Length: 543
Image (cartoon, rainbow, N blue to C red; front, side, top):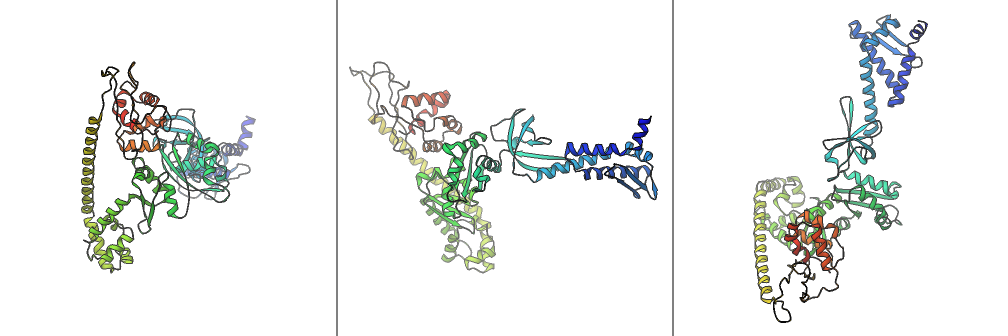
């Protein structure tokens, strides 16, 4: 009984102990906890007396003693303790949770874009739940690198993408797809970036496939690209491994677009760059043999370069630009108030279609065209009305040109096949008897690989016993062949499926004899793929 009386005489110790435990365990400020308890007891006391105001509650933060008044009447500790115990418990818990939520939110809200390391605690429908110490975060399927999967107990790196409150809880969303993840990995692996000797100016990314990172050096003695790559690629290798083999292009930044855009489009060789600030567009001229390389697989190279420099980049050959200018002159001649001066002014500013004109307004057009604003408005309205008509006409012209080119290609292939058939010689043995099983294959060379030697093999990939060796006009004996980057571009242009190209990727730039190359290709492709694509793949191999 004496112990009980002693505890009743000093109820503040329990409050002080509770505050200290919450402060140490959950890192909530003591002041916040005391205010939460005071607020909870006040609400519970008002409910007890059936009033909405007139109750004052204060806790001595040094002793934990509660002082409460209802009007002018001070409540005795026994009544106050009963009210607090019976009515304020849930309120206190709620206030503490709110304070804890605020603490977590304030801690992580300022860390958006920063790299964190956590451990996967569970995986639910593809979403990984990651422990960040005393907080949990979500790594949604949509923010994971395509093709990767995570398992319980795995340590993962990611950047904080979003932090938001949901009721009394804080939702932390992580990402491994965001460009900031690549930026954070560079900062982690390359000390010069952390030391501000090298600066990352821009990052463009298509997660799981390819990224472009533009860097510049503040210290002229430091090569920014070389420092990012490291000795024998040691630094960039670690980044690529974390990104599951994603290709990374390190681009040297330059404030001049005439230099930056060619850098961003590497490895393609650029002939000329025209910039049009009013439209935020750059027209890049390339030769025919560099067109596919500049555009990239499914437009990936030019798309990433556009994101990197912040301009709309359009790749053209010299012939395509001439066609676009001729088309623009023809269509701009139909505009209201058309004149050679207006057409020249539009083309000089980079406008090549009615769609381009819809990107400006009457005031903007009047600034450089010399037309009054009212007439400029008529021009813009006309362009908006007939932009679809022009686009349909352009598409029809393009379709007809493609059909004509396809027809010409078919005729050329047919003529080449007939010529090959007329010039084919029958293989014979010593007695001029045909040798069974021997077969000569000819390659259908693409324009990009017109100078590539032909690899000739028998139908069984080796000459039958007792028969003479089958040779092409240029003997391949002792020669080594490989599938280069240009070969892959040409194969893609020849409509070889991406799934087949991915299987061939381990053979890229691998020097092999004709027989070894055939064997390697046969191993990575299934029977149907080998039957369908073996000949065209071999025809693009380079000596």
